[in-house]
Figure 1 (spheres, rainbow, N blue to C red):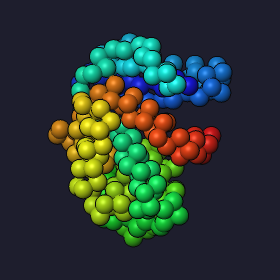
Figure 2 (cartoon, one colour):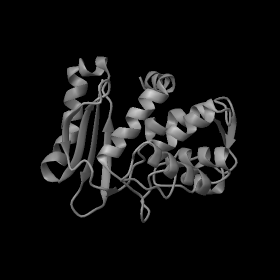
Figure 3 (cartoon, rainbow, N blue to C red):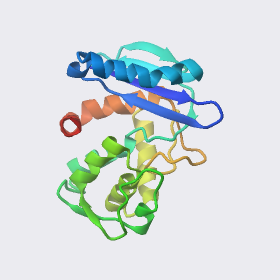
Figure 4 (spheres, helix red, strand yellow):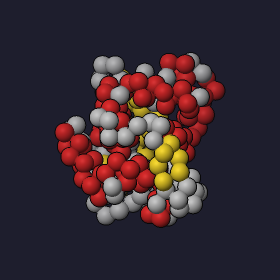
Length: 212
């Protein structure tokens, strides 16, 4: 597989991130790849961008552009997902555990599951919702379930980031909502995606299957 990571600078607003991991089957689907190219085209033509393209198996960098430039995050680079998988393997939380949404979680915007305070979902469903619709409230509620609140969970994220070599990244919240000092770089996003693929391959395969 190739992992393609783009961080796009749109004129007049803060940075955003586009991440895609085409599988072997997807690379053989011309309609899907054309659609992906059409989505990326206006960003690459009309805006500056940072990007890195890596071969997931060898780690070889095939293309890089401003890959170490730190930018304000408006999307989560999935380090929170790495922490959730680690917690599951450590026995701190189980996939079938039911998690209650707090007021803090339901007030997370702009993208969320639109649930009410007190409603519950399984950890498994929350994990599937994260990459499918980029629901920010799932990051909050999982952080609260594992660490009690967002703050200690975010502290653990920053420690893990440094251990993985994500030297251009700092996190203020589990999700990617813009906060002062909430930064990352294209190379760092590639690093966490590669780490997810290597350290939690079974979980990632399940996510890919659920996305089909």
